[in-house]
Image (tube, one colour):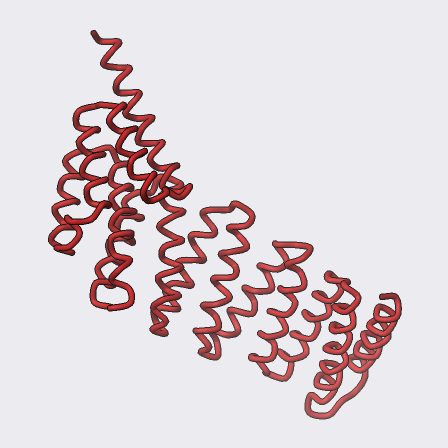
Length: 289
């Protein structure tokens, strides 16, 4: 470890010296870049992540001086991956700088991947609004590059988080859109009922029985096979329990579905919100009588 640190420091000093000297046609930046690259690698081997990250940023600056935007972007991404182990904010900052350069040179597929990585970092920090923002950017870029599977993965993340912060119409729109597009794809059409179930649960969270009924009719028109699924029956029975303001029936319907198709934590959280509203309504009714 100590040997690698000493080696890295020596290489870094030599690189700085190159930058301070004279060089023809940008050659001093190329020479310094080579030394910074080796220094950063030695810091990595020593697991000195902050110093490795800082050295990759110096490498990026050298590449920018020689108009090598792709190499500069790569260096910023390398810096971000080092900083990821010590500072999420530094990692995000470096990824953003890398993405900006990739956009400049039209490498949108790579930019999309790093937007997704930024979104994941914000997700790990529980910064839901920022995660939504960057998953949306990633989805747009993937869509433009016709990388549909990755675009849909990012859109589903947006829908999931939007529902978490009670932006139900946004979630519904995304799930319905993905379901619509999936119907025309033999590989994806089996997932349609799942997307419509998610959209339906978000409809339930809005608490409008008429809207739920209209949505189910719309989903039947969209996919005629949907009315024969357990997902459709589940949404229909839940809607009926809300209409009848029957908490016990609601609980039984959820339990029965969960015993056959286990509900994930996202669906459970949203259904609990629906149940709490239903309970509150029941208490109001009791108070009035």
